[in-house]
Image (cartoon, rainbow, N blue to C red; front, side, top):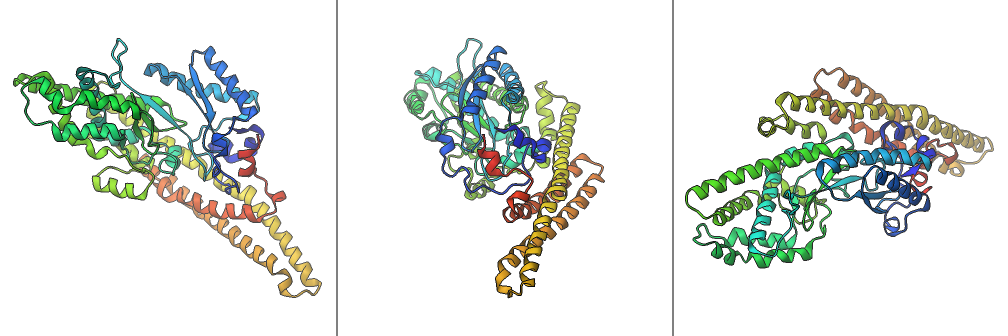
Length: 507
């Protein structure tokens, strides 16, 4: 949330929703004073206003507070039925944007509007319930209710394990590529966090449940399930914020969804893979019952098998760490970091069969969605490239050259006065550094433009998307490095673009 006037003075924010240039301010989020401070009065007035407008539309809002990054804030509609929740979430973004204009503010919905500080996302809280309102992911107080909880809980983990590639594709976008794994958001590796108590319960099921049972009571007594599971209620907070898919007491939280995203795609995929896993679970349980096993025994046997089959997707540690990336590779978990490749999961034979079997998407519909997502990616990255070139040529280089001329005239004047070289060595050092970065920006922009032309000449959407991802996009950071250095060197009165210190802290 930033001042509207300052936002309008940044062509990159207007065109792309993020700042393609901008040096980190002296103060960012290191003090965490914004996170633990009070909401600024101007923003507080805006939040009250858009909450009232939301209530008029039937959108139930409760949460209102600062987030970690300066100028970053959070709101949350109350947990409700999924179709309605998705509609409300989408409508809320529109309401926020419209109401902000009344307060001369600008809402930035991009996943990473500012480099070097936390980006933004959506925490999709998800659970399952019966048509009578019983939460199937809420632990109970009896063996029967806890067996039901355990069955749905383990099926969810198995679904995440078996279809991690589809979940990753469901959150893929040009904006989210900047955020995932950027030390404040979940990594591109899809894993699940369940906490110490449930980890212990699953380990007990795997190690203590024997292969054959004669009586239901024996199953329950061996597992002590009625004693173990209620303890997890003491651990019902999201203690691991680095996990993309975390259990938080009586629900899961899919934390990798981007802040600009329509939640429908991610939730459609999640519901479909859960449906697939539960269908397989019932078939396997029914097959054992037909062979003569008691229902509870059959359920426990399949649960045990699912725990063994999906345990590698469980991770309790720091998802930001390099060690986790190495460990995930050893486990064989996919780590697809960019959108063009993440989207491939949408059109595999496995995905086509899955969605058609459950009457969600036909093959042509999946192919069409894949094509649309690739096109969206291409156009977003393409626009960013054009903005980078435009800002560099029309704003950055002219301002830098003007200051370069100031230094030249200063040095020339000192020389004309007969001063020795030591007297203007500092000016020479600055001039040399500025000249170096000016040359580098000009050269890199020219190379990027040629790379864009080569990418545009490609015919296939996948090939074009990959070219923009691997051949064009890397230039953005290289150009940015020199531009941000110039921002530090050039006279502030000559620098045309509002800086991070103004965008983030002026309210």
